[in-house]
Length: 77
Image (cartoon, rainbow, N blue to C red; front, side):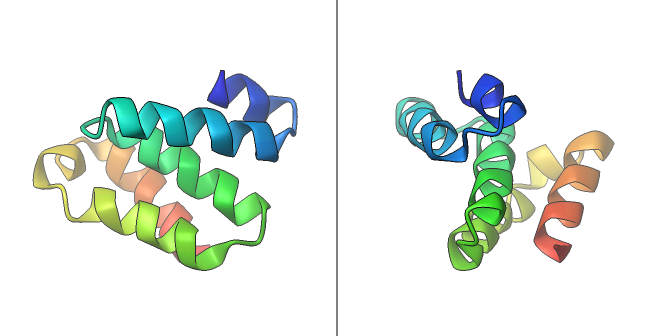
């Protein structure tokens, strides 16, 4: 639901869905990346960076090239 909300441009709903997803399963780097992207769209840059940093500090997640690329891109923005 969070990704669907992002695709439709409803970032407020996306943030709620993704917050819930993260609370339920803290081990999914994709949730943090999507949440970071959502926070960027809502101009909540500190929260976005915190979300990307969570993934940057996860060595297992960062061993995946696509995850690393998306995370560095988001953190750079």
